[in-house]
Length: 172
Image 1 (tube, rainbow, N blue to C red):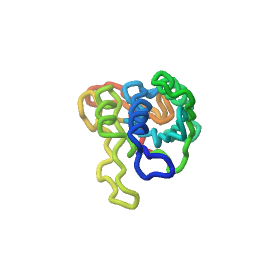
Image 2: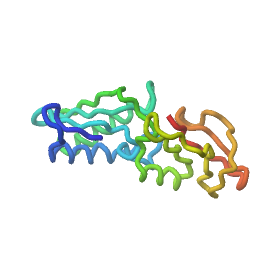
Image 3: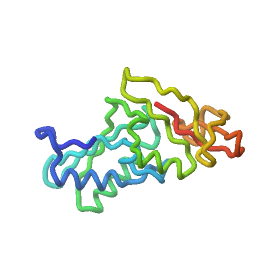
Image 4: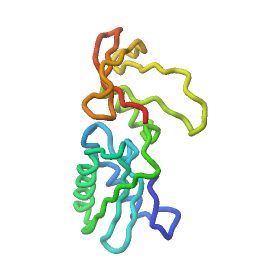
């Protein structure tokens, strides 16, 4: 959720525009997704003429991509005439795979990465299915090859139906 300045409850039109620009930045590890689709953009605040603060929550503490995300956001906002951009890391509330938008989940599957299963509300019902669906053929007959893949937030799996390996974005 993108919030407005601390004195207001709703974002200003300028903050909404800047949030669209910052949110359109591609994720450095999964460039098929934008930061908004990944759900890591938490807030954009205008603190004065030409002074903007952007809040990001990493997918996990110590995520090496947060530095690249920050730099890319600064660059994008500088290109749109914002001279002073500060990107701050916000750890609470923690990011969850539930923060990935439906569009982001669709793009992950189209890219060949099995999206995380929705976790639902805290204290809510537990999903009945534990199956990971193959993004290539749709089969749920898959096996874990490695708990870690190209990034720490993904696991490497293989479909036993089509025999294709694929990444699975782990549920957090």
